[in-house]
Amino acid sequence: MLIHPNKEQCAKRNSLFILLVLLLPFVSRCISPYTPELGTYKPLLVVEGLITDENRPYAIRLSYSMQKNDSTIPGISDATVYITDDQGNTAHFSNSGRGIYRTDSLEITGSAGHAYQLHIELSDGRIYNSNACTLFPVPDIDSVYFAKDQQLSNDQTQLKDGVSVFLDSRPGSGGQYFLRWDYEDTWKFKVPDPVKYVYINSNQILKIPTEEVKEYCWKSGSPSELLIRAMSGNASGRIVKQPIKFIVPDESDRLSVRYSIIVNQYSLSEEEYNYWNDLKKLNDVGSDIFGSQPFEVLGNIKNVSDPSEKVLGYFQVSAVSKKRIYIDYGDIYSYNLPGFHYDCTSFLMRPGPGDLNMNTGFPYTWDQYYSYISKNYPYNFVRPVYFNLQDSIIYLVFTMPACSDCELSGSFTKPSFWTDK
Image (tube, rainbow, N blue to C red; front, side):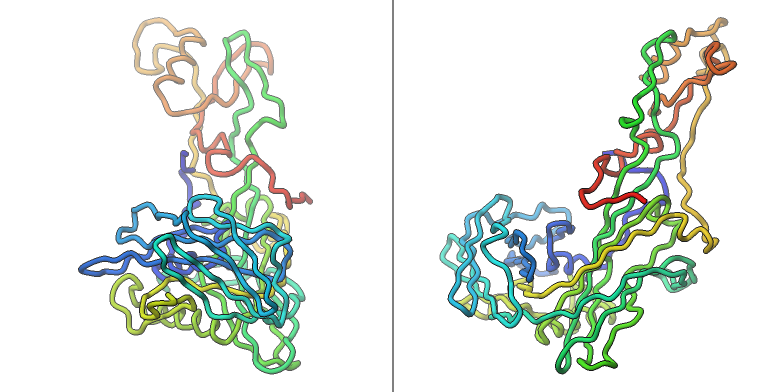
């Protein structure tokens, strides 16, 4: 897959986030290995899973940690996985390959006030159980919205202008409660010079049907930081202007056409909140999570026969509240923010002695010229340019592939939830 040669870069995730994505819901997340610096390395069991109060399929992923970051994560595909609740119900997960175990949407749905426990039996006889985790109710999200904002760059040296997404939420009930947020963001983008014609020969240059022109595509992203908060369960505990995501428009094509973000608000137990908070502290002190650590962060999964064995991951049980918003380029136009620029080069080319440095003394034909460029240069033919619109060709336009085919950096298939303005 060719990567778009522009300013849209994959965000550099610190060592904490590499571990966090291992522990967050993994259907649409990156998975990275845990690589502790040990003299004699012993792979550790990694468990990923989240059960909510949504009526949907759930999945548990089992793998082993790897010593090298560039190693392929070995999924565990010979285990027995199931969940029990405090009412005596059992939900079995089926092996779907690559260490992923799934259940159908009707087999288990979390319910507030009830406790759930994960059970894993490996083929070598080892048995692992999570703690019994109570599913706590979560307050509804009131609104998700955006505004012009400023934030320091990652190296804390520059104040950047951009757009922040915020959340307001109703207060929880009772005493203290704990929340976590994540999101899935998706955006529609446009390449600057899409391929609109197919060159057959100089007398037959066919226009591609509009619906097949790969001009608009979609990309998706994932959280780059851990968002948690402890709240008081009274009226003053209402959450206002909780930061969710900050976007710098000239560093990403997220806001170039139409952007969507769905924010998930999860309930946490105090135990899980402390787990995430310890990881957050670990990151704040600048420790390398793969090297020496100032303290140890333990999850909620243990080997029944050997509780001293270290197991990576946290079996999460949470209620969830969701809300989606869209942001169009026109919505932020008045902010006067610098826009995203595609680093593209297009060429208007025509056959002749000066072209290609051939010095043949006579011009190439259009067909010979097109064939030469196509075979020897990494550019796509985009369109012809005619004299007097349709009289005769005066140029053939070529451009960089990533600037003419949006599918090289995104998906040409519209997401099922997507709506256009």
